[in-house]
Image (cartoon, rainbow, N blue to C red; front, side, top):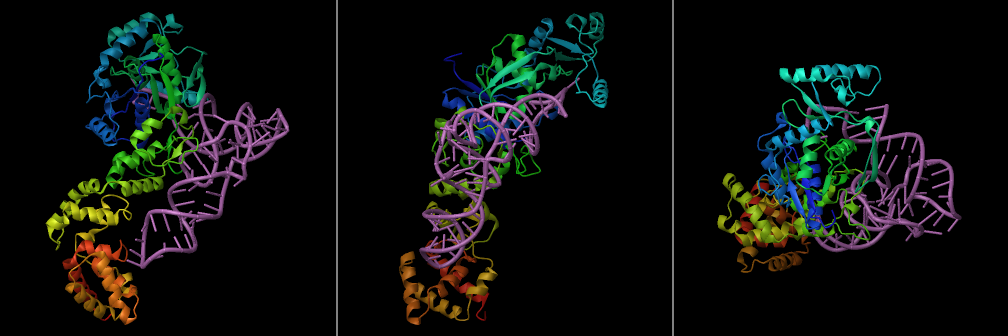
Length: 502
RNA sequence: GGCCCCAUCGACUAGUGGUUAGGUCACCACCCUUUCAAGGUGGCAGCACGGGUUCGAAUCCCGUUGGGGUCACCA
């Protein structure tokens, strides 16, 4: 065991999209493996044919890669331990099942679902714990079913499942890497079905076999698996295999502290992608939900590389963590503030190009779609947007003429003298050669001073006619970026449309 | 209900026997300011409860309460 290469896995079932809890589980597995210079692999658990969703496997892996979690081995990346899809490993499970049957650690069960349900109801009525009644446990294994009867059913081709024979009253113990020693009593667990009647294994059976065959050293998974630990441990024991180390992660919670679920908000990573969150922010956020650097660290923003450097299972907490979007919002802003402008530009340009196809605009297209122009918009707006797409939507006036003027602002700032002043100032701007922020500012102040007016009487109306709204970046810089032509046009048009009377 | 896990501000958390219980988000106030942000300063706010152990417990032990998970031919 010592010196062995660390191998971890994320094993989702392809039933839909990637859950944020799943993302965190995958991330911790990835961080731990990379920290230890080991391998991180993705295995697809599709043993429930009825729940299988088309394309879910590709989505899952694609989303993980979007997040920067790149597997060393997976159904699409290949590897030496394949196949990585359980439905392609059926013969393996069948062989191991035979071995369990031969060793009398498992047995055939021909009970129908109806029968099982009936039995369950009966036990419930009697106030007992619902548990399989071991009707088909063979005589030779301590049960009451004659071998001849079992033979007969088998020969008739009756449908059956294979159950593991859980020994009575033994204590099963293991040491969880996060929670410490945990003990279970075998008498509280049921004879788990290992092979279903459709010939597919159950999760419990397949995952134990695969985890062993794929040589994983550490199983890092959600806390919801804790109660099934004894079943898994018993299987390792039946096969004579040394179990890997286990770490059960605390759950991600809804605001009401129940297990994170739909109905109380978005749970799919794709939902957050669609809203405009970046992978950096999501990964950073989710990493901090249950893990922290400890000691005196006050760092909140981490790159993936830093996380890899600093991650350790010892620093993972035990209590569930509420998935609180407010901090995610804040993190997203931190990333937008520090991201190189050019990187943002290449991201938003397609959005803008698309908008330009559908909305009329008057500024020269080659100018407003140029990298230089967009970079200036980004730098003016980066401290004011929540998501990258807002560089286009929230700051649309950098690309489109204002369609309307914020009523409240007009009400407050558009006094009777404004149109006249604006016209006069526009003429001044028109005649000036230099349209830089500095010179506009100087011109405005010089214009207003002899009239004994405050700059604000002009500043606010200028912002309104130029952008249509009362908020935004530095006025002078905004005007400079818009350029003389657009600014003069917007002043003229603003006066026309808002009117002189107001 | 049985079994299992968990318990520090509203949220994420630091803390591993002696601290004015620290940080971040959110919230509030003030500053900066042409607006909105960003930023700065300050503030509000927490050890679930009860017993022990100890000179001394947020920290260790027991119990209570509370919350959660799980009890399928789903994962």
